[in-house]
Length: 102
View: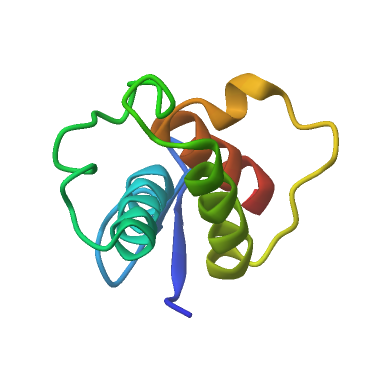
């Protein structure tokens, strides 16, 4: 696991190896999971970080697959009472992951 450093002024953890903030790294990993799950980047190439995944055409089965893959990739379990808006976009999913890690 990459070493983490904390920027005291902004209180943001930055990955020392990549120089990325955790939200950016989480969004990239979520996109990579979608590419793996969907067998290519056709979907991820057209969807923005803030666009509804369901409205962009992600099926409910694919969303469930993504959530399971995220549990493995980010080493956490989804709570039964997670708010639906958390599951809406790549941005909201990444924010949730970052919140869990802090």
